[in-house]
Image 1 (cartoon, rainbow, N blue to C red):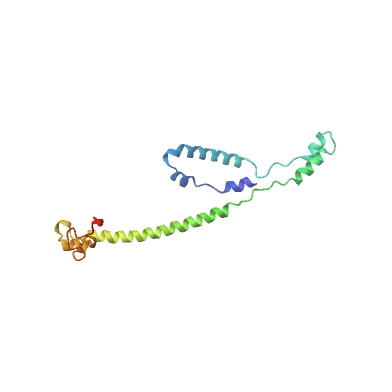
Image 2 (spheres, one colour):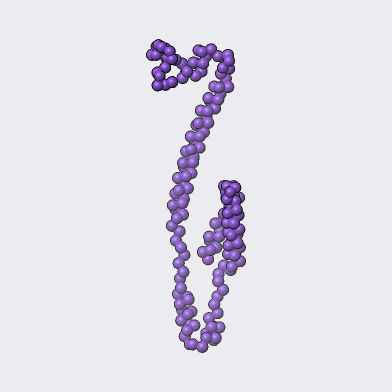
Length: 161
């Protein structure tokens, strides 16, 4: 039965609940309740439908040949199962998302290492109240004024101020 195979794909409700924002908790609970009700109904059904007792209907129906015709049509009936066309696309999207997430994580680790170096620089530098101008310029090179290129105060281009 196709419904059984669908039911086998269990939902991790705990992980799902962690991602639900507080303002949508009611809708989430309604979805979970409905899903549990449908799963319980599906589990209460037998794996295969009950067999039809054609001999009983042949003896009970007055018109001859009608039950034989129904039996022949019933046995010839094939209900097609839906074809899964989206799983491959979803798997590809998941792989792409995992690849971009891992690239982001690697970039973040590199930024963390850079920020830790800067933090160490700030922890190990001379306190500002004890710094001289030379110490400040050595620690922060962007504060150094170029008196050769701009000999007059403010020793920077006006556009940079």
